[in-house]
Length: 279
Image 1 (cartoon, helix red, strand yellow):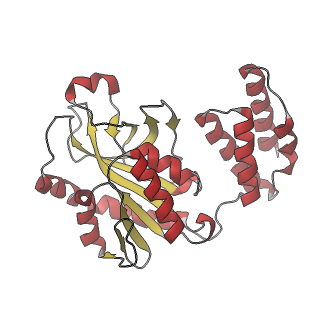
Image 2 (cartoon, helix red, strand yellow; image 1 turned 180 degrees about the horizontal axis):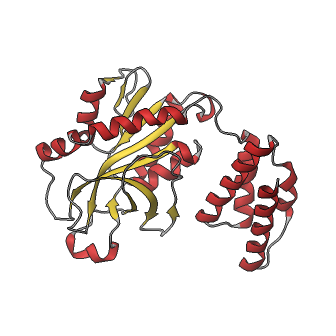
């Protein structure tokens, strides 16, 4: 199943009409619209709402253990850089939660043929007077909640974040007709990316066994890895699983190690990398 998550009905309406999605009468907790192999959920604003809706919709429509699914967060975002035109569509390559300063790095498995930008998720709307604080990043209120929840369920390369520039942080309401026109102008790109997601949802495509993914999560927690290091660890493990057709039992002893410093942790991580990539 391919799933699209939007925060607003304003963002969803052009997609619903374009893809011919109909409201699922069995869902009352949040609006969900369905087609044969595509559904769209409208979560409401904020990272908490996005996280809750992501987990819920994947649990309800995602089938067994999240297998055979891809999820796309599509939404409007502000941009403090006036040189970036409204209506520009970006693939997000880094998501930072402004409150915690924790960053996530979507794995760009698909060639989306879109420009890339980082995204900063804030708890409150950002206005022009703070534009300098965010540099060339896009700004939204859902991305970090969406990504963090999705990554608990799906392989990270089955998660796509697309943001379209709606404004330059002006403190004013978005014009619905203008936003609809901007989204409609990018429907060809969005459709192409939705279709590309078919390449991500082949049954049992994740080379890591469920027990291996669980072990890697425990290892990352034990070693207190950063988000970047966790991303690297899972990538090395997937490469190892594809090449060797083996599970990760060879690196299980690392789970019992103790680390007295960041330097010792980083040396151990380098050893794990060498072991996984040497096969």
